[in-house]
Figure 1 (cartoon, rainbow, N blue to C red):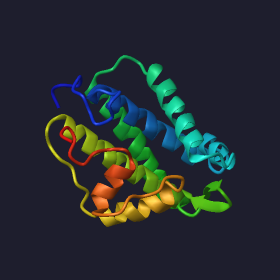
Figure 2: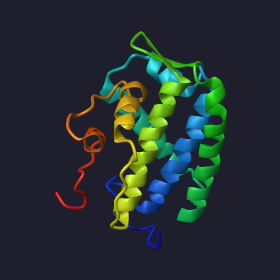
Figure 3: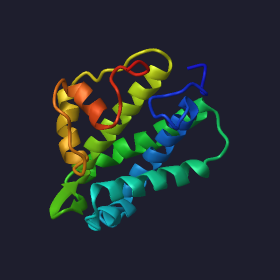
Length: 179
């Protein structure tokens, strides 16, 4: 990618900002994994707050973490993401069945949350691809639909084509930058 100032489907973020967000998310997911079941994420979901409240609180966390990132290039942010995401991947199998958090009386495991990571990282791969005029479609979008239900329990999933449903449910237009 040459233009890290390019707009993305995440309307408030350039490609460079999105790379920073990916870095922050991977670092947070690794922290949540290491601290489960007593992580910041577990405490957030234990509130059993309304979906809108959870979304706002996570958005504030995203903004705060982005604001304190060191000045880095897009490639440096992507590299930091790959390091944390790799550590997350390496630790997850041994903790797969551990309780990660409880939401509205349902226990979600580390494995369930790994689904959320897969969904988020595929969504942002699509965002970055679209920023350069390309496309990204997961090999198995149905797997992401299943991951959505267990990994993102506070958000409903749209119907239709599996990948487009995930895109629409996350607030994206499958036809961005068009309609």
